[in-house]
Image (cartoon, rainbow, N blue to C red; front, side, top):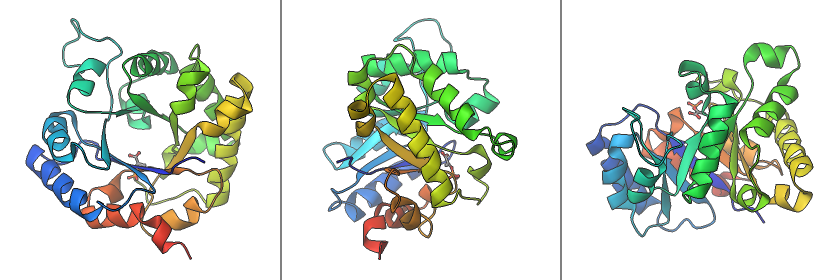
Length: 254
Ligand code: PEP
């Protein structure tokens, strides 16, 4: 049984005090929710304050990016050791905004993935196609390449703890959501690629989230699909009540 995982990606939003205030509110509102793994990913500078608030709670913290080296002359970068020190258990890797605006390649992502596993951080690895790729029916091919190259030379014990976020780029921040059936098709393909790289038992343990304009209204339909194990949420995670409703998708399922 895969435990659903819902993660908030705040991107470059919220000051340290706003982030800590959100964490305090969420901690109280979500204190009885154990059926879903809840993760918040604040900007780097807020990790210290949010980590303090969320220590010993049912809410986990993740970073939005990291460098693959543990220390050294990499001005402006943040290492996996620093993230662990602040209480991060998760790290988003290969978000489409990093691939697109900061030219991150599958090779860079692979280095970060290996590093995250070796420092005991659970990576949330993002994959997804551009609009023109969906229109030319190359979605499955694009996602397969991202999975194979991003996860090259990583052993199956690590893979079992992996979280993949399938995020069609045309759906991120646009208000357009993939239909549950479309998302489900890609999720099934990701699982079959993982199975071909390792074995089906390993692939069955990987949690695959959907991301792209998820809202309290759309989450229930997505989570009904068998292969959708959670959501990576941007815009709708910035407001604590909206994020809470998304975490409570179970209750809104009829
Ligand atoms: C994201 O940041 O990963 C994301 C899916 O954003 P949004 O929910 O705003 O589309």
